Image (cartoon, one colour):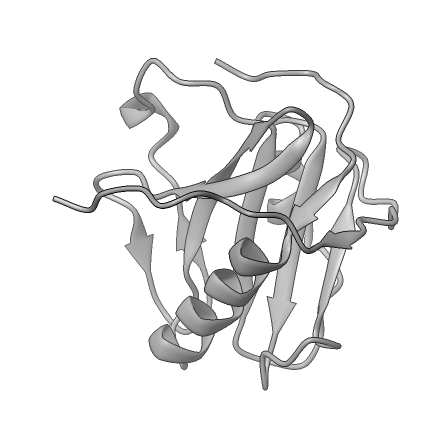
Length: 135
């Protein structure tokens, strides 16, 4: 399910996680869906069966569990962080905020887009995500 809620920003820890996953999967792309709590992007959902290579990452949207996504995230192994035609098709199916992180995956190497591929401001917020137990 895709959730259309007003997005206020992204948690700094979540952005740090996205950049670290991007670095660790380089030179392959990674992809996931974004989840939000109270209008703040807090989580990245990885779908089973996602295929990743140096040229693309393919999300198996039919594997999406009964959860709400507010957008998508993926990395580009190059420093080009503009959405491709394939990215725009994904954007139209997966919510209102879409993050692309580009090599070398630093804090200045990412952008957020709306569903049509226009850059949108996504403030990075220093919020407490709580202490969740990891199983």
